Image (cartoon, rainbow, N blue to C red):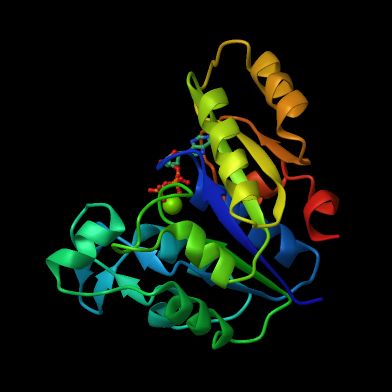
Length: 225
Ligand SMILES: Nc1ncnc2c1ncn2[C@@H]1O[C@H](COP(=O)(O)OP(=O)(O)OP(=O)(O)O)[C@@H](O)[C@H]1O
Ligand SMILES: [Mg+2]
């Protein structure tokens, strides 16, 4: 097996990193080797080794093999802004084809889990968006829906855009973002009826959303076969 997935979300802060790390843990638990890619990160903090992004560090910690930080996250930007604006501040231009080519240079693994930044149509430059990067990566897309008020509209719009852009929509994960959400089963059922794509997992609100805890809530046979 050598597969890759692109994890997008209905918004920023909806659980993409937690789900991506859970996918890595699920793969590792089944004996598959893993690699991760977080091509673009903003709001990075300067440490002794350079700019570091929390998401990329979480993904790196969940891997079955050591991979240098710079290969997992080649574009680490300090400004806590949308990617194209953060890049502008440091006079950097990002190109979807170039970023996709870097994924091919990662160490070989059975499963490569890629996390976008923000949502599906977040701009990458004046002309490209995250969608162009997902397409250039030729990776089926997994949509993380952060279950909260407003998510139905965001999920349906994002799913339409993924399909319209010509990406393979592998399915979606319902990630429950509050300890006591209202009518969560009805919200998920409403999406199941309308999304026409497999529900790959329902992750409850977890006080400690560690990769192995999240992995337990993913329906693994649904996404890696
Ligand atoms: N199921 C959950 N239970 C409890 N907390 C969660 C859950 N999912 C996500 N969170 C928390 O919500 C926050 C956002 O999650 P996460 O960083 O995975 O989102 P994201 O979509 O990757 O965000 P970004 O757009 O910044 O990359 C984190 O603090 C995370 O711990
Ligand atoms: Mg993230």
